[in-house]
Length: 116
Image (tube, rainbow, N blue to C red):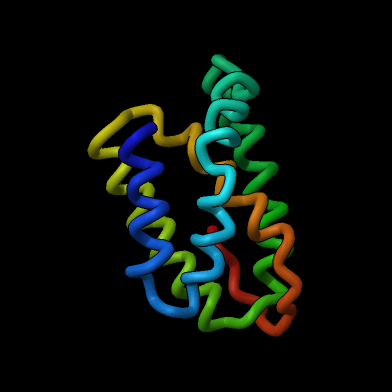
């Protein structure tokens, strides 16, 4: 958890400037949301995958309406984030939903690029 928290904070300042506001928003309640997600995520791997799949579909619906440059940068950044966390901690999947909430709040609707 500490590695994910540190990486979110680090990326709030070092990511492509188009992502700074996103990571700053994700960082605000990251630890609290991570704890909540850990408690809510089903232990059954198939149920967890289904839940995350549904959340990613929601993200794709939002991203389809967003700026293409932002979407591409975010996609690359989240893939990099996931790879880093996987290398550090096998439970990285529990932190993925924490990045979905800020996306669902974004209002920019100019692109049709999908995240996943």
